[in-house]
Image (cartoon, rainbow over all chains, first blue to last red; front, side, top):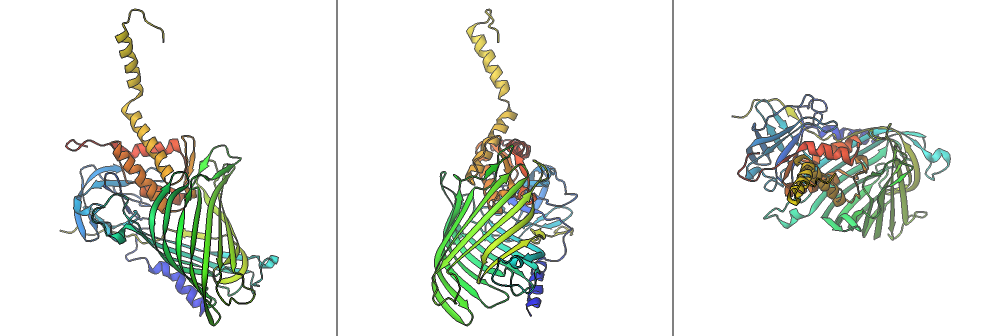
Amino acid sequence: MKRALLLVLLALPLAAQTAPAPPPGCAPTLAYNAGTLQWSVDFVGCNPAPTFTAGDQVTLIIGAAKCTGTVTRYDPAFPPIAAAVTFSVPQACSPTETYAAMTAQLITASSTTNLKMINALNQFAQTLSVGPVTTGDQLGNGNNAATSSQAYQLQYDVTFIKVPPFVPTPNLPFFARLERQFQLSINTTDQEKGFIDDNSITGGLFMPRISAGNLLAQGKIGAQINYERAIHTSDSNFDATATVEGLIPALQSINLMSSATRRGSPLALAFSYGLRRKHAGNTDDNGRMFSGTALYHLFAGDQYQVDLSATTTWNDVDNLPAGTSRTQHNFKAQVWYAPSASSNFKVTTSFSNGSFGPVLAKLRQYFVGVALSNISSSVTTPTTPPK
Amino acid sequence: MADDPSQTTDQKTTAMLQAFAELDTPAQQQRDAVTACLLAGLAFIGIDATQTTIIAFSAINNDQLCVELAHSIETCLTNKGYGIRALSSPFIQLRAAGTQMSIDNLVSALVSFSWLLVPAGGAQ
C-alpha cells in the first residue's frame, strides 16, 4: 500500500505535464518589464530559437485578453541566457490589466506557443529529486533504528505563488495586494523506519516587500496554515501561525580564503508563532508552537559554496507521548562545487541532521542523487494561425 | 597637459569641456546607468555589492528574489531613459545554471540587452 502511494506520488509531476509533449528542453517563458510594461518571451532551451525583426507583428493571448503586439527588440542568445523577443501591446494586454491571468500563448505566423508565466504575478514551479540515501543509524547516531541501511528517497516540491504587481495598478482589489502562497512538499523514502519522512501542505497570505535600510530587505508579514504528516505513520501536525520573514543585509555571505568577494543572499530569517493541533497515535492534542528558520551562504576558496540552514521548533502541546521532545532542531548543509573560479556551481552533496516533521525521531542521512528541476509544463505546438 | 600661452581662457575652457565630453560618450552614459541600476537592484534584494564583487546566482535564495531584482533594475533604467528586455527570466536562468558572474560582466550583458528610449512621438 505504502509503495503504491509512493508510485502515485512519483507519477504526480508527470501527470502535471499537459499534452502534447513539448520539444525536449524547450520551455518559453513570459515576463514583463516593470518600467516600460513591455512583454518579453525568452525561448529557454529552444534550439533553434525563432528569430524576429523589430516591427514584426505577434499575437499575445493572456488570460481572456488577445492583442496584436509589435516587436521592439530581438536579443539573440547570450549563453547561458536564452534568446528573447520583446514587444509592446495595447493597454488591454498590459501587465497592469492582466495581473490575474494564469495562462498565456504567443502566436506567430508559423506557430502557437504556450508560455510559462514566470513573472511576479503568478509563479508555478516544481522540483523532483530521486536517489539512494544511506542511513546514519549504522553509525549509532539515531534512536529510530532502520531495518535497512539503504533506501530510495523521493523529494518533490511544488510551489504556487501569486504576488501583487510590482508596478502601481489602479483598481486592484485588497486581496490582490497580498502575496498568496501554496506549497506541497514531499520528502520520504520507501522505508518505514530510520529515514526522513517529512511531508507538508502550506498555504499563506503575506504583505510583501517590507524593507528597513540595512536591517531588513524583502520582508514579509502574514499568516499561514501548515499541515505536515508522515506517509509511513498517521502522526501529523496542523499549525495556524503568524509569520515574519526577511533578509538581513547587515549579515552578508562571508568568503573564506577566496581571491574575490562573492555574494549571494544575506542571512535569511523566518519566524512563526501560533496554534498547533497534533495527532499522535489515537489522540489529538492542542497547544502553542513557535518555529524559527535561518539560511546562510558562505564561500570557501574560489570553488566551494556552502548553504547552511537550521530550523528550531517548540511546542507546548498537551499529552505528548513519553520521550517526545517539545523542541525539535534540524540542520542541513549543502555543498556546491565549481571546477574553476568562473564556472557554474553545481550541488555535490548534502548532509541533514536532526529531527524532522511529525516523526519525532533523531535521524541523520546523506544524499547523493539526481535532481530534476523546473519541470512545469510549457508546450510549443506548431499550428495553423487563427484567422 | 602643457599650458599653451597662445590660448585664451575661453579656448582652454572649451578644450577641457571637449575632453570631458569625449569621456562621457552615450555608450559610457548607458554603462554608468546600467551599473548604478544593477547595484541599486542588488541592494533592493539585500545584496551589498561593489564593482569588484562576483554575484553567485546559486546563492540567491529563490526565484522570487530574481524577479524583484529584475523589476527593480527595469524601473530604474526606464527612469534613466533606457529600455531593456524583461530581466526576470534571464536572472532565473542564471540561478538555475548556478552561474557566478562579476559585476563587470553582468553590466556588459545588461548593456547589450538595453537601448535608449526615445520620448513619445519619436521613433525607437
